[in-house]
Image 1: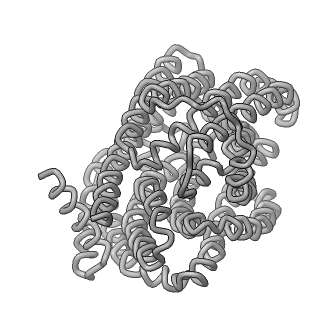
Image 2: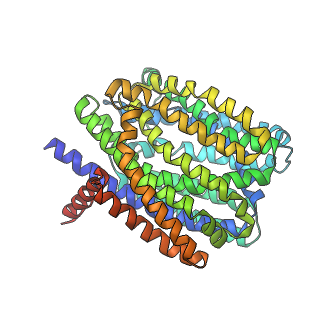
Image 3: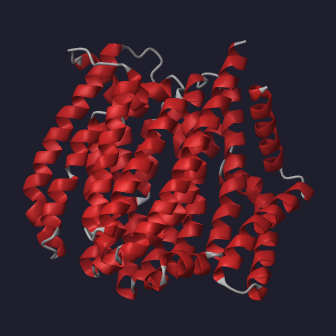
Length: 483
């Protein structure tokens, strides 16, 4: 009975997570296209230059405590309150620090405009710190429906504000206000929906207990923040804001598609897996099924987008963005690997081995450094290709401990994706041929997307790919639940 209840919660959680992410990503995608048509690459570049600083501040505010609360079995209101106040105190200190460092950041990039941008965007640090525990409580209780509501409302309202300001000629400030308004709306709604108010207590013992787990995630997150954002930092320093804008925009679309699929599956299954962490057989079964589903969705979708990048950019983003085409294509292949690597890392958090999570991330630092040393003198394109190579190598590093602990390492994972890759290759050949004969960018997108995905599904069915079975089971379960 308990297993059935957990299964139903996981299923409905996945449904609402899908509603949130598919709708949210679709709306974000449309808003992003509209903004890209109005704004210039330099506007995105200015925001991209600051990405690494805000990545670090978000990291230090949470410090891995959200995952620690999810992973802990006997969490209390004292635990929640302690982490709430920790987040708030750290956010105030970080805001003050960035406020005074803003002129130095502007000087580093030789861009005076960044000083005021940094001080205004840093307000997000204070606002977002208030919503972390609220969102964590909803995730722990597998309440994904209200999270979907909050997410969609934030995207629609803040996106509309951003588009309106862009049309009015505010340039980069349209992106700034869009970002801040989203944070304000999200935080306000979480407090309204959650009905939770922190106690007037800060427990040192609770903090120490949670920090023993989260400290390793903080260290790993620190490494990850460097690994993910150092490219924008150095591109902005060595090249210019326009190149950062191209890189930022090129990274956004593959990331949207990759995150859409991964977050639906992992966002629901992480709290589920932590609840069954003591049942190793069930845990491995859920882990394996999730891995197969990620393969099945991510590989064909990102391959199709890589094939259709040129008509997509020319038709929707306009000619000024044409230099991003090869960047997007390489980043599509990098983002195919990222969700698989993320799952391999998250399984370590699920079983409480954040120490191994940290150790694996430390090993990857030299890779990023070597890649940047080699590629930066060769230009932006070389930097992106180097990023793909390091991402590919990182997959094998991330899969080491899952292979050692669960017997599901890189070799078995590659074998699991074999049929999906074969079906994707068949789809790619068919789409490539269709693009040769179809006139106009609009027709290429309109016809190649649905037919390409249909060819992939049919080829997968003929090959008896387990991913098809997983999709059928999921759809049938949702239909049965509705009845």
